[in-house]
Length: 471
Image (cartoon, rainbow, N blue to C red; front, top):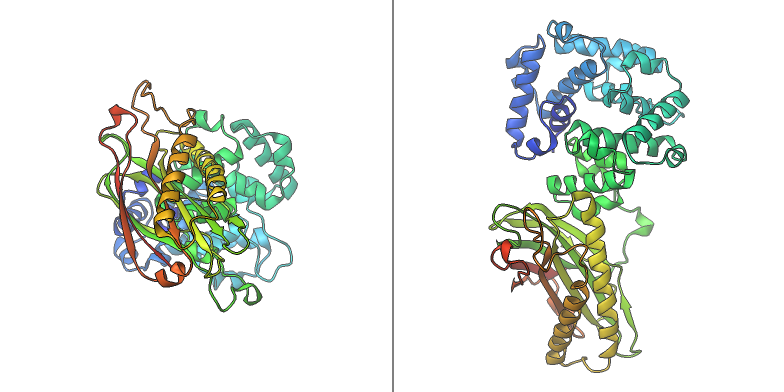
């Protein structure tokens, strides 16, 4: 990923959905075209820059224009060096940081300082409140420089309470970083044309966060890993930040013990026939429920539900590659481990509703698996055919449980406009008898499923192949 994407997005040269269709090299060429057209910078010199340097120049231009520090006419007379020197003067006045030190910084770092990043070696935490106000068009750079932090807070709270459904009192209770993150979500959704002003007025911060997670999931394939990120970090990824820097490993003392736990991992989904009709795409969510059964004590444990979006715009023929994995399975070799998988298309639902609905489906699955597993705990050990039977029993229970979710699915096929093609793409319970997890480790396997099609307007039944292993 590259911050070239962020420059195009923040500069309003392309919106989120347009950028998702543009290859990285075409994004680069588009930014070069915009800068060469709108500034005095030489196009050949821009072509010679690496991606990071080019993105930095783009950030200089977009900041200067959006902050209303220079008019479009004035910008056409300025080179990249002119833009840089102008910003250095402004950041020096804003932060009090020495000019020679600012001269040694990269362009992108100068822009981040102007947006509110913590000054190097400062004990005062940075805040992006002012940057969000500028990016949202709520204040110019000159106006922001005259505002105290409290004035920036109150201005942003007023704007968010006015332009969204969020409660002003709840916004007041947020710290500066979380308030700026909430503002960044709003500015991204509006500026990137993901939602209209009318739609944003009906949405809380949580609604906006869920939409951004769905959008970035489609952009990056990171799925449920995004749920652990703060709002500002989600926006950073949307703007092209490398996600790897935001997922830091645990410190040494918290690392796993020498013997690694097992993980059930699906390396890819091959979508041979999609669930939705041909004119629409699938948005598929995977629920993973792992049950561990102890044959000695007869105890059972369910690991926490894992909910993963595997893709937000899936068509027939697509192959969804990634790491679609369970949480670590801390089972003994003598245990029986059951992995229940349910893949659900929620593409007919609003993006901001999909995660909540996927969790609702997963909760129904959890409610089915535990009782059925508990009822047969004394019968399946050491008998593979009995393991197959329990998987079939769980599948029946899942069908029954999910069949009552009429607020998500339209099984009767009664739906005005495009058909509601929400529903189960595949489901299965894979049972590992004692010592089978150990023997299956790092051995690839695959299974193919033909699902059901409950709405005849949606076309053929979905056909999906999964490639998986124990790692």
